[in-house]
Image (cartoon, rainbow, N blue to C red; front, side, top):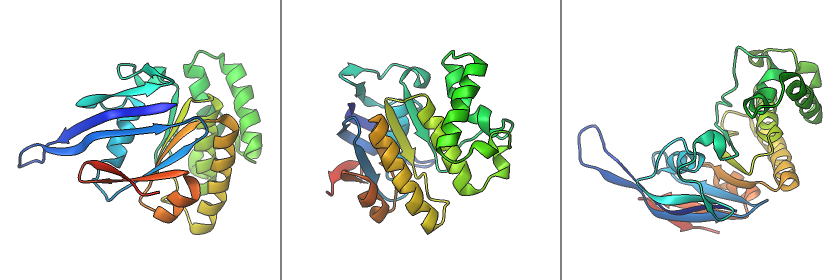
Length: 219
C-alpha cells in the first residue's frame, strides 16, 4: 500500500509571501487500486505526485510503502514508475532500448534486458517497432512504449500525470482499458492525476479533488 501522510508544501509567488499549496494532505492507495486526483491547474496535483515519486521534498509529512517510511529514499530506490503526459521517452534510443532502460538501471545485463523488452513489446503489439526511433511512432504507439517501459520493472506503484491528455478520444478509450488490465494484473497501487473527471471516474475506484491546499473526496 502507498500512503501519503499529512503532506504539506508551500510555494512562494515571484512577488508575494508564501502560500499553502498542499495542507496536511493524506491519501492511501492499496495494491491493485487506482485513485484519481483532480483539480484545477496549479492546485498541487503534479506536486503531490512528484513528492510521492521522490522528485520533490515535502515541507512536512511522510511517504510510506507497505508500512515503511520511504520519504528519504531517492526516486530510483522507491520501485515506482512515473509517467508524464509527454511520455519522457529517450529520443536517442530506439524503442527496444527505451523499454529495457529501467532494467539496465537495476543491474540487469543489457542482452537480457533487451530480450525482456522484446517480450513486453510483443504484448503491446509493438514487436515490429523494436528497432525504430520513438519519434517515428504515433502518439498512441509512444504511449504504449511508455507503458511497456513502466511495467517491465514490475513497479510497486504507478504514478500517472495526465497520461492521455495529448491523445484523441478513441485512443484514450482504448488505452484506458489496457491500463486497467495491466494495473489489475500487476497489482500496482496507482495514483492518477487528471483534470478530466469522466476519465477519472472510468479509471479510479476513488476520486479526490485538490482545492485551496485541501484534499476532498468526491466519490
